[in-house]
Image (cartoon, rainbow, N blue to C red; front, side, top):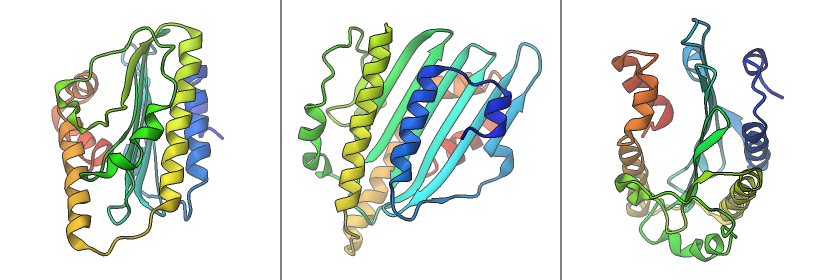
Length: 241
C-alpha cells in the first residue's frame, strides 16, 4: 500500500507506480527483510509553498545479503518526478549493487537507467552474460554514460524513453535485472576473508564517491534547500558509505 503522504500528494504516475510495485515485490522475496529507522525528517519531506511544491518519500530496509535497500520517490513543482533506488549489498556477500533511476519531466522520461554494478574486482564475470541476454533492442534513444560512470557494469542500460512501448520495455528490463540480482543473492554465502570484505567495502565507497559527482542531483535539490542540507542529504540518505 502507498503511504498516507504519497496518497495525499496524489502520486498517480502509472510508470513510476508500476516500477515501484515491481521493486517492492522483488524486495519482499528477500530473507530477513526489516525496515531501517532513520530521522523522520528525512523519511517524509513535504512543502506546499506555491511554486515550490515538493515531496520526497524515502523507504529504508535491510535483508540477508543487503545492508541497505533504499527507494526514493520525489516530485518537485508538480512537473519533475523522480524514482531512485539503490540496493547496497552487505560486503560479506558477493552481490552486485542494484541501481535504478527514472527522471520524468511532465510526460517526458528524459533519463532511465538500471544496472547491476560490480562490488568487487572480478564479480561482474559471474553475471555479465545473464545481463547481456536481456533484450534491449527496442530502445531508440540510448544515452551516453557520464565520465564518472566507470562504476557501472558493461551492461548498464541508460536511455530516454520515447513511447509507451519503450516505457513498458524499461519496466521489463528492470524486472529482469532484479530477478538476476535476487538469484545471485540467494546463492551468496557469507565471506570470512577480511581482504575480500575490505575490497567490497572499498568498491561501495567508490560507487558513492562517483555518484556524488553527478551534479544534476544537487542542482535540483539546491532549488529548494540550502547547501548544508543538500550535502547532508546526499551523503547520509542517497549515498551513505
